[in-house]
Amino acid sequence: MTSQSCEMCLMPFKKDNGKRESELYCSYCFKEGELVYKEDDIKQFQQYCCQSMIKNGTNQYLAKFYTLFIPFAPHWRKLKKIKPLKSKE
Image (cartoon, rainbow, N blue to C red; front, side, top):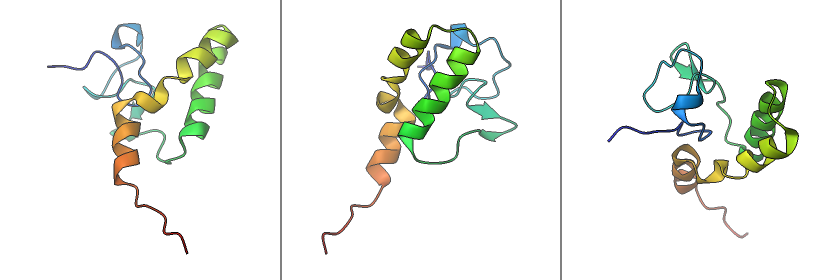
């Protein structure tokens, strides 16, 4: 089954006006053969996405609402599972 939205930001592919290079990621998240955002700070990524949406004409409240769902994207769920637990010393 083919994904219907980006595995990193959850943007529906039908809303992606750019040239997609990946079946899993939108044209904003994946460019020139690699992920644009390489860090693992989800809060920073949410802020980046929100600012980008506002810059592209999305209402600020709607942009903030959309970014609330990003932690449920497959990319971030996988990342959370492979991060080692911090020891309590």
